[in-house]
Structures are given as C-alpha cells and as structure tokens.
Image (cartoon, rainbow, N blue to C red; front, side):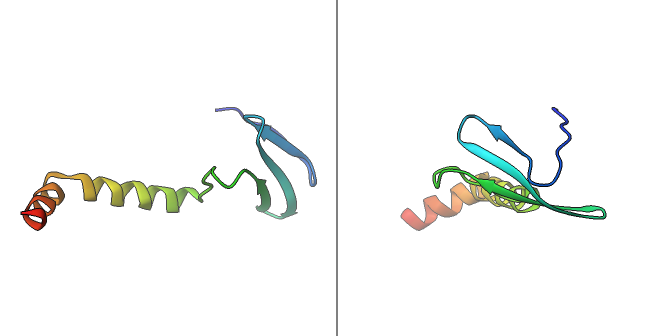
Length: 72
C-alpha cells in the first residue's frame, strides 16, 4: 500500500486518467472528489464488497443448477 499525505485542494493521479482531490477536512472525516472516465467504475469499498458477494452467490453451483432448470 502506498500512503500519501495531502492537504485540502491537493490531488493525486492514478493511471493517467483518475484524479482524486481532497475537497474538505473536518476532524476525522475527509471528503474526496474523484474524477474518472465514465467507463471506470468507482465504488465505496463496502458497496464493492456487497457486489462481489452477490456475484459469488450468483455463480455458485446452486445458482448454476437454478439456471439449468430455468433453461430446461
């Protein structure tokens, strides 16, 4: 993991096309702005984990059996 220090209105660039800017700092909370192309998905980690879990459930053997039964 790369750890960086940034102040308000400072940014970092990822892969030449994603920019993360520190918009506001209030105590323990930091507000970030993310500028990325539309084709680059950006999720909060807890939402990303939920999506991954749902995808795993959909791809398990029971899910495949249900799909086979549906298609005949």
